[in-house]
Image 1 (cartoon, rainbow, N blue to C red):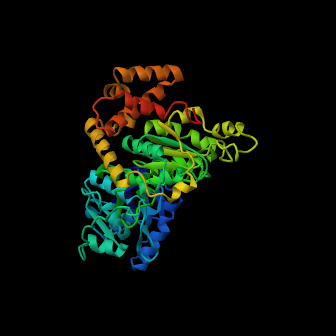
Image 2 (tube, rainbow, N blue to C red):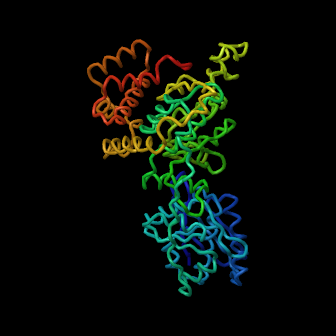
Image 3 (cartoon, rainbow, N blue to C red):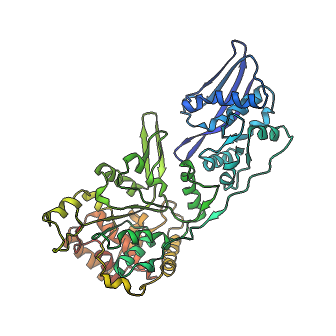
Length: 504
């Protein structure tokens, strides 16, 4: 007789159903696991044997074979312990086989039979709901998995509790979802003294999900501005929160099952490797660009990042997804993020101040910013200079809008875009619009069109640059609640891209 249990194997954010088959046959007593398991899965036999022994359950003196089907799909991770144990218990008649076959299980077994939390409970619950099965998982994962309302989630603290549930001795209640977390420690934009143009660029970037590059001397407030960007971004929609949380679940970043409605803000150090940024390593885990999905990726000291790392951003910025290619698999992760970067004008940082610039100026600025390739620069919708702040200005009272007032305008602009792109699943903001759709929503007329054509001819805008100016102009019009793009909207959009700054 072959007993069956079910679990999942992760391929990116997709959880593929795996059938765990257990057969007992005559022969020399042995316990083998087949079906392309990795080291952690192969070691499950020792953990399962020790856990059963701790509960005084003796294994029969027969040959035990566990097959993980489909056999050509790589199986990685310790979450296979629980389904293997359940298939074995069903094979020896401890628990009903038909009940085990109606559930998807995942969890790591401790040697004393307790269940250890594992990553990926949220996508596993999605897969279980699609297969019309319940999900059995460790107690610490129950609150996370229960966010999938269509899934019946059973969270247990030990293998003994799972056995008692399936045998009807002590049924476990369905798990409740964790709390919705909101970050109450966001920094306010009103803390920034001066820098009104930079604040305006930040508002436009947040409203249309546009990529932003800030240059300026050290201490001018570039990082300070970026740190306050989350305070003006609209909260995640339920669908976006689920998308983002599935990626964070695979990375083990969901704490106590709580899902946040705040948009992610990732700021990796400039020494980060290519694999840590785009994803990869053992198991092809998601990188920073995927962890920033539906949020912000902030790269401080942009020229200090390794050139190969920066070049890998070019395709994900355009497509909104990344494919991590490995010899045995191609793993796809979503990465629709807003790229915000900051850079000094040169290595010493004082290129624009003749009294403080180094002896290599101005050539040092060209060499330093030359580390950023032209194609990558072309992908920034907004490029601004952040000038130094006078020391005397620091004593002035806060000026400009608070984050709450800016966030209200951003939210209104996002609502306009949501209505505009209703029925366009791949287009959520103006930054996503392309092709005929961009032509339909962002073609200026009259004086605005003439201004754009003259600027494109005068300054040699690329086709990509032309489209990005149109997207920014559309966002500026949305912030003004204007139906058509007018000349002031185009003029402001051009001011963030044309000569007049160090990156022109």
